[in-house]
View 1 (cartoon, helix red, strand yellow):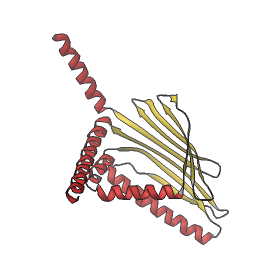
View 2 (cartoon, rainbow, N blue to C red):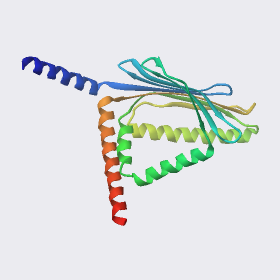
View 3 (cartoon, rainbow, N blue to C red):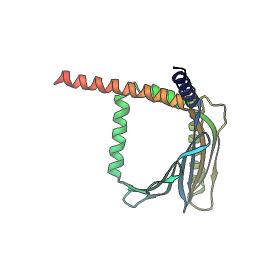
View 4 (cartoon, one colour):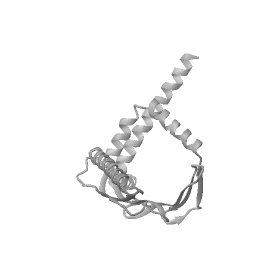
Length: 219
């Protein structure tokens, strides 16, 4: 009994320790003429658990998008993945997401609480923009700066963060240019992920049962 009790105490302490540890998410994006890279890294206790590299995002003449993905799980390379998204498929996905939002509004507050659970450690976003006409470049830079400012303000308010995001928009009056670099580091406790995920799952199942009962009563 003493041994069993000791094992249970060790398991309990381990579970509590894991729940209070943090997962760190690092996001890096580079968009330039010949370089379009996205890096997503997930770390736990400074160990790299998952890494996704998206080195290619090509927009074709028919407005379809080609995406090439490379994943690592616990430093083990998984098979590369090539994906193609047509305009019709992207439109269908948009309608699906819109339908989910319209029919699961009870879930949105729980998703909001999940976002609020994240802690913002670093945010740096620099863009360089330019079109042929100087006045249009100035207008575009001003609009982009305002959009970034509102987005960063909303992000810090939602996450209740004291960090001041660093962002700038550089005008290029000499040639048409579209370049952007983004670095973002977030963290969240595993216990908060589990609590919010269970809450969202519970709400989703409740809505799903309600929809089934409604269809049954109408038939």
